[in-house]
Amino acid sequence: MSARAAILARVRTAQRTARLPTQNAERLAARVRTPADTLARFREELTTLGVENFVEDSPEAVGLRVQAFCEGKRVLAWDSAELPYRAGSILASPIFGSRARDEQASAEIGVTGCDGAVAETGSLVLLSAKGRSRAVSLLPAVHLAIVRRDQIVFSMGEFFARNTARMDASPSCTFVTGPSRTADIELTLTLGVHGPGKLVVVIGP
Image (cartoon, rainbow, N blue to C red; front, side):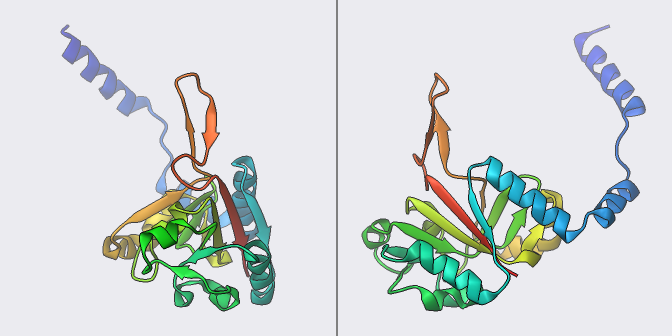
């Protein structure tokens, strides 16, 4: 038997004997997973990634939390209309993505909303659009993301299923999983080389 024939034979055998989850099983798993479970898993993954995360029960509390992080700092932000809970109204003289790049690069903290949050990986999903510059989540040393509780889904597949049309219409889609990190050939981990070295997530009602 040739190598090609042997490989194809193994593939055919695997197709016959593999135990794959059925669509019904996936639906059942989704039904028994409560929003509280999904939120808890999301926070667990964020903590594992080294992400500070806070859950607030009112828009006012979200604003106060954001204000506490941004006070006294130079802030780069999505346009005010794009930030949930009217959080843009509490930012003092923020820089927006329409300003000169050098001015944006001088910011100490970037404030964004998000378009989805994936519980099983602790990832944030950001779709770029007018008023939602990618630079806000990439240039400053600290990225603060505001998440609505109804934006949290359990899996990446669930996010894709819910947002196919929006992703098709967006110029780019960015997945943020923890602070920016890289490792050299000796596996020495360094944070903040290619993006923010600190990520903060504020989850609202």
